[in-house]
Length: 421
Picture 1 (cartoon, rainbow, N blue to C red):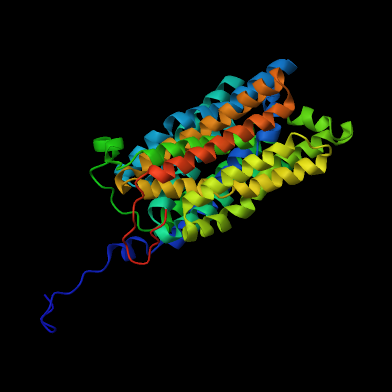
Picture 2: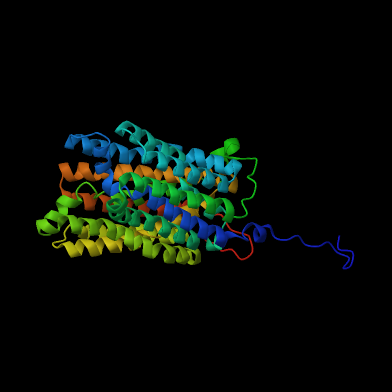
């Protein structure tokens, strides 16, 4: 009771306190995600060389073991992402980032001391099991950022993650020749450990988890699950669109450019979409905060479908590069908008669990994309890969439009937050 004024004092709005450190948390998550992704991907260009150093001499076996080691991390990461999200709901999001960064630092250091290829594959499986800093950052930023700024913040984070995926192999290809392969693993472990320290000491305001965690009510706590399922499918489509051409890219480019330029142009084509997404993720996320996340999702899928069609009929390499870059620009807004819609559609106590499933669906797209591209390209024709992917993107846009029209759209009532989702 406010005795001086003779009235009850109004409590401080809870959101003001909860979101007091969201900018600092975002900065730490962006830097931490970028450095951990760089550290995890910098050895990809020299993975076959490391497999040879571990005693594999047959060229076919080198390729096979390199593929197994590469995919091992994604396999266990896809399986465990919902578990880590569930634990984040119960014990706090910051704790999951601390766990991921410390676990990755230890495992990465052990990779540099592997004695045979079996140990390397086992450690890659363990990295996927213990890792997940970037996906954990998505959960923390999504739940500890004001909803009116959620799209922009997640766009900034997505740009940092994608930049790490682009920079990692480039840095690794240069660094391995300077310090050696094994030393590069130890250097990567040191960088990840710095991210661990930054997470421990700089991330603030990790409120206690709601005891009514996802383990108690899970999906039953979601008022309308249709938007969530739509976002899981959309996340898979996002990765499928980027990865479907991976098995055919070199062969397709060889039909467009001289043989001496195939490797170079193929690399630019593959990185062109990523560069476009890096540039557009933050602006599209900011735009989505103003006009609605569903509108950006539907528009992005539609534009992607349209841009995939001419990719099937290009006659020169530069045309494919430009179209892939434009497609990346269109797709850049999907990841932050997917996360924002999920954040708007589920109670905070289940956000980590559902966003964990979202991460798993994206990993599934990374697996399904090359499988679909390889099958369609090998049995029907390479141009059909682009057309089939365009059809899937168009169906995704139509499906999201239908779900948006029928779903129960939550209305944000907190002061200063946008009611659009």
